[in-house]
Length: 82
Image (cartoon, helix red, strand yellow):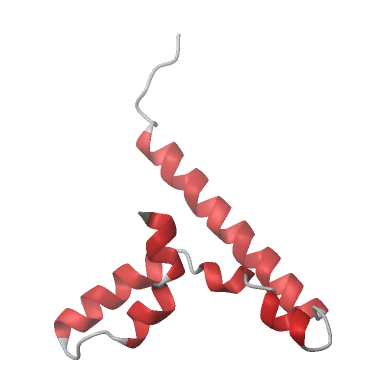
């Protein structure tokens, strides 16, 4: 489910309702991973993959991994391993 929502997160961000409900949904959409950052086909159709694009995608991947690891640590911080 997270993978599919991450694929359509740009669409979801563009179709949020106005007002307080839209702001709350906007926070939830911002927490979804945006897999469009890793879509390199558009860059390959032009001149190739520029270095800033590659660095931005690498930094985004690092932040996604750090967030997932933090969520895992938080979920299991009270577990005792024997």
